[in-house]
Length: 636
Image (cartoon, rainbow, N blue to C red):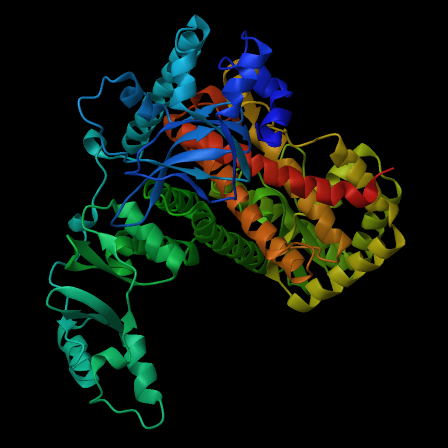
């Protein structure tokens, strides 16, 4: 008797009109369906394992899955293909079914559920019974052709990326090119003191613990210091006492950026290098970042010594560092954090230089001030020097203070322009009266924005609430935020109006089949206007609702997690989604800048690799969930 689930599924168009069952008598279709089986998989479940015989196809009824290949040495998974609802899994086994393989090849790939999945298993017996129908032939041929095209596109994309990142002949630097082949090592039974002496003699900060070329563990300088500081520490104790067993390793043939990602993401500084299960050497963070560290140090030195004439040179140094970070695929949030710190130093130097210039003219600072960045810099996402977005708050509402800070605002804006920041077309700069003022002036300005919520005022408020303190008095900053909170309490309807404005900009929903979405209907997407702005505004509304006024998006996400507005799981998914979107956005914009092309945030969906499509569709789903969460309490 047929499974009730299968019978119910047959009444769905997805199954009844599928080429395997469409066009045959109802009884025949139900008979074929009775030979099939409904299978359920949880997220990250392995649907098909490698080196396992395949005895049929799987029709995806609900959810997403991905075809992956795993590096046995590094453990890294590479997504080769994304399978959407309505598509088949298991095409590689058709050659066996058709009898064209001289011998069954080893299955090197696996299929993993990337969400909750419901699939219908179609055994080859059913395929055999329907093989004589031309519609089935045409369907399978079309599916295989599309899959083959996707795989070639993905391979071509990888070669293009390698070339774009400056690698000759599309070859990446390998770990073996930067590692130290003579890794210092001691046996597990050797005394801790022996390990310490070896570090001192070789002037290194770690030793491996090995036994017959087999890696047992690693001891770092910090391990020895902590052991020596412990009460009753015995330096003659065996090395295995303090070693980190089964350390994270990398293959000798792994790419440079694989090692860099492991070190950055796992928070380690020493990475043993393996070859055929034996120790081949060691690579450290210093090995990987030595050149970049030199660039960073030189750039910081230039910033600290910059004057009006040398300000334009800073941009080149920061751009070189950004290019290096992107070329080596440092995680985008880490890269932006590094660049943000450099830009913050630059802004701080510009302010100090501007105040110094006023002093030379005999003008003395009359009271405390606080200088803030807004826009991409305020969000910690500025990787290129775009236009200026900043404002100035000062303590006293006096004529003297007004005149000094008016002049200071003009100096700051002028010096920033010299450094490479374009003047803001919307005039959102502290050289403008609307974007500077004493505490009392800002209090009235905010009250006006909140009570007279015109579109212009709401747009000003949206930009304002991306602010971040860059320089000045922390005490004044605290007073300023206290005044803002008071205004927020008196103007509850303000958040409602922000939410209504945001409701008009829904993040795109990518619920349609991948092929129709990316290849037929929507051809492009403006990542800035359609995705990043709605994401930032949604996070802004949630943060303001719970009392968080300023800071970067990541700081706001952490705040909302601590307040239990976000679960740990959603926080993780959200950060991953933001990282995916920013990686796509930043890399495209950076290549435009390097190629001298017109800067645009529009991404052609047809040019995305299979992996990028999969990551984009899942990321947008998470960001849309954030937007729904932010707007939920403001429904009419």
